Each structure stands twice: as structure tokens, then as C-alpha cells.
Length: 418
Image (cartoon, rainbow, N blue to C red; front, side, top):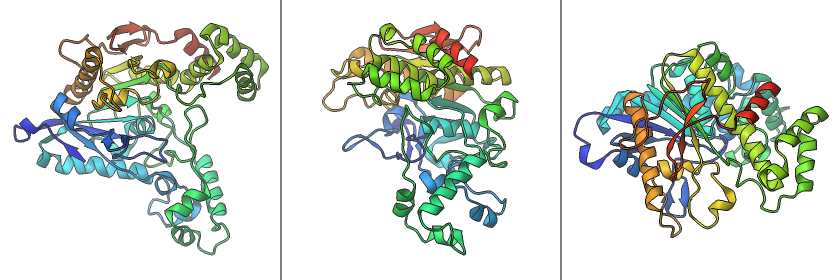
């Protein structure tokens, strides 16, 4: 899908913003609806606000996008299965290079950006040789630099083949292809949980598209070096935790997640119910830190130490004035409503400050695409990342400003745990 600013379609070549959707690499769509009849990733408002060309795309999901199996290896020209979804993303970026000029876009100024699993895939593209030269900047929203080792992916593939009744077939690949997508999904149902482990279908270290684990590739400087933004939200897991979450449930979670009693005591002290006001809030803080916020710092530090191109970090803390928002906080994906300008949903009328934040974010995102520098007219200057200061842009309607240090003591603790 391609969106251009109406008034400037024929007025030269505009920077391009290519968006990769999330939902665990097993769900989601470029046509995802935030409410019935209203697209979440409608790029029209973002194109108008930024003056850029906005592209959204589809890629294969679940086993259709990521399945690894020796039978599929055997028939592949490079003896590699899996990462089909990553191939789709590379193909889409190649299309942008080839054809975006016909839509008013500048193939020499292309930004890739994605949220959640989309952010994971942005990092995969940052470290894939196949994507070299296909983009000039990158932005990761609440995503990590993770990939399955091949051993994990092979185990997932073996389980699926067994569950679908193909493991004893004379030709496993033919058997797998005889199954419908519904049968493949039912054989190993993907589970997406912000507070649990990674979904079973992810980018895989395969030696070619992903020669090594993404974070290792960045640390060794073996990545596509471009200006990059990375950030996270204050209460990422806020909607994944029941409002009735009890102290007993919290203690059971701590016991099962941290079997080492020394570590468990440290975690329980750092994330106590008393310190956060409730067991639920402590759980949200813990899971948000460990899965999103602290990894964001780790990735920013790795990038800034491995490249001369600037790196920027943000921390989204905005909570809309909507009645239920204060209960959940700045949850996973909330920033997308501001980026794509879809705040006015379900009868909600955004405040002037909320609209201003949305406009600023669209300008920051658009600026990174246009010049490699996320700038917004009339808004605070977003300074490049300094690991010693952990400086970042606080995205909040009431306090849009630069800050230093995000949950520093807690992230320092996790850095020692590894």
C-alpha cells in the first residue's frame, strides 16, 4: 500500500517511510483495524503530516513465514529453510528501490520502521547482508534484536511436522505442502504474549540471510550502518495483566520464573508490590523492563559503539485522557495511534496537547526518513544517544523533552544478570 501527500504527488521526489507491522510474526496485517472500519496503519495522515511517501506491506506469518525443517533445507538452492518472511521484506524493499519513483518517492531516502515483531524484523534487516543498500535509516518501536538459534527452529519444525502427521512421510516437504494453512496453524498454534516467552516463529540464524545473531552482528560492526532510532513504552505489558492480579499470583510468578533463590530475592526486592503500589503494577514494571525497556538501552548502546551514524532513543510515557487509559498506562502499541494519527476513535476527542504530540511524532519520524535526523519544527531538539548519559526523548503530551536515564538502577541490575 502506498500513500502520498495529495498536494505534492508531482512535486519532485519525497522521502519514503516503509512500515512493518507487528503481532509476534504470527498475526497482524497491514490492513489491521484499530476499531471496526478504521485502519490502524492508514498512512494517509502520516503522509500528509510528514510530506513523505508512506508504504505498508504484508509478509508471510507463522509457519508459512518462518518454518525450518531439514526436508525443506534439502530442496533449497542455498540449503536453507525458514526466514521466508524476511525474504518477503527484502523483496518489498527491492520493489521500493525499483518502482517508488512512480509514486513520487525518492529511492535514495528510505526509512524502515516497525513495531513489536515489526521492530524485531527491522533489526533483522539491519543485520542481513541481503538488505544492504535498500534503506538509509531505521526505527524500532518496542522491538528487540533477537533471532532463534537454528537448533530451536529445527525443534519447532520437527514438532509441527509430527503434529500434522508428516514426520514419517516418505517425502516430508510434499506432505507439508498438502496441508492447508489452517491445518498447519492448528498443528502448532502460535501464542502471542508480551509477558511470556518468544512466539515459536521468529527470524532464524541461518548463515546467509542472518549470518549471526542480530545483537552479535551489531556489536561486531557487521551490520547495515544507518541512522537509527530505538524506543519503548513505559507500561508495555499493561494490557496483558489482569486487573485482579493478586500478590499470591505475583509470588507464584516470581518462584516459577526465577528458580535461583538469590536472584528471586533480588528481583522481589527491586520490584516489590509495596514499591509500586500493587502486585499488578510491580508485575507490569518487571515484565516491561525485562522484555522491552532495558533491551532498548542495550541495543542503543551496542549501536552507538559500533557505528559513526547517529543513534537516538525515545521513551513513550503518554497516557491519553480516555477513562480506561490511566488503569493500563502507556501500553504496548499505544504510540502507533500517535504515529498514524488515529486518536479520534470510539467517540474519543483528543486534547490539543495530544494532537500536538501526534504531530510532533509524525515530524520526528518523517525527519529521520528525510535526513537521518529526527527533527520537528517547534519541538525540542532530539540529541544523538550518549551511552554514558542514556539521553532520550520523552514522548509525553504534558512533557515533551529530553531526559537522561530510563529505569537506570533496574536496567543496571538486569545487565549484571545477563
